[in-house]
Length: 392
Image 1: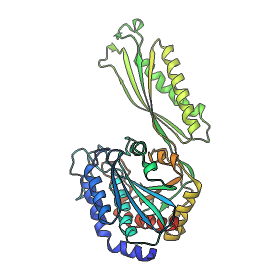
Image 2 (image 1 turned 90 degrees about the vertical axis):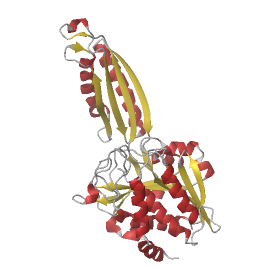
Image 3 (image 1 turned 45 degrees about the vertical axis):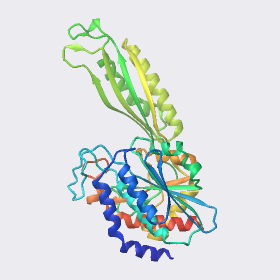
Image 4 (image 1 turned 135 degrees about the vertical axis):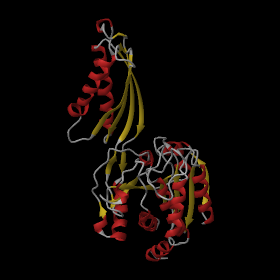
């Protein structure tokens, strides 16, 4: 069966997958709670002839399809979880769950992979093993790690693994690729300052944690500007400060919440070293003690060269060079597909959700965001063609 025929068949069935996407959108589920979504995915895959495995890493699903005599093995991944955001998109298919919404397009990614799965199951013209990976809890829950801890790549070995993500602000249906480091690591630190509280009229009798916190926030601005190579990228954000309750009381304790990101593993290590030392010494200079709770988050996402070139080649053959961009800029956002890429070579690429001024330009994690249904067809065609190119 030709790729062109498959594309025509997909076009004729677009309504079905748009309906699936909107149904998932109307019923969002947080990480590791995607029971309804997982059941929908598993049911569809079983109906189409896949061998289905459920409960991997909690609510993860894998569909396996074997064709011909080939020994190559390919993994395609989609995420399924939603976010704790009250939707304000005004769509007819808006979330029916108060305080929850698909604000990142995971409903669309799942619909794309299901659309591809349907037609791949009807095509016997590839040789090898295909694993369709539907992952829970990408949004900070580390669902990729949970699936791998549950034996994902031991039970379902892959020679390469791929994933896509929609990107508002980029022209709809354009594909963006980058070799090497492509998305940042994300770590989190809670700084708790312990001082001596007292009356606001007698500050000399205290060790003021608010003044120390202010100095630390200012000093942290030098970590990137004076410690990181200017040709590297890094981010240190103080997102929250909590201290005190009254204007005439000097707080005995203050807490700061930090987000720390880097596009290079060595820079990531450097940031931790410099932040911890700076905070300790700054606090000491104000006669305050600093307690640092550091939490490692997602790793730097690194795309392997050969899989990335292959994916870009497939996209170029399908959509033409004008819709394919092979030197996309890196992003300081983070993605737990990075952990899968640490175990298996592969590629994570972006598909434009809509350029400036369009409905698809509303940024992800925004109450007004919605996935652009026009991406389901090109996204599914991309997966179809990649399967046929890789599994030969």
